[in-house]
Length: 207
Image (cartoon, rainbow, N blue to C red; front, side):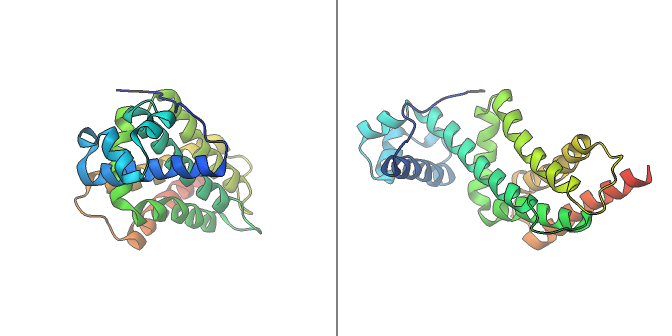
């Protein structure tokens, strides 16, 4: 199932944003506890502390809440990576990789149960267009950080290198969450990701 399901109302005031956020937080809590198929709109309303009628004012159904929640959480992660990509001063590629790897991996593993549930759900509800749109945001942050590095090779195809580097980071992290029975050690996983990306960049330089 690939859906693009929009909310009924786009929050425009702080109170509305708080209500929408409470609904999404309640959905994530129930998703982790019960699984998607066992969560009802009535359950979400109860945990969020809103009336069922209010819930339907904001969202037409559970699929809409799921789609907005996944997109919102991924955009928050993309914003964290974007901030990390914007260096306050010059840094080399290996330092850039360490910063980007930590910015992507640590938020995911710090809330591993939530992200595991959301990532499994993403495969059910995300349309190809939405998935590509969000993916490109991460790649753009990687590209901007790489080309700003003091030792960035000018001959490199920045878009291709950034796409491949982010694919390495994203795949290792997501598969650690989705495949392993227990959440891996954060520092170890960050180190593995760093090694993989730095190894790829060194190999690209040699070629």
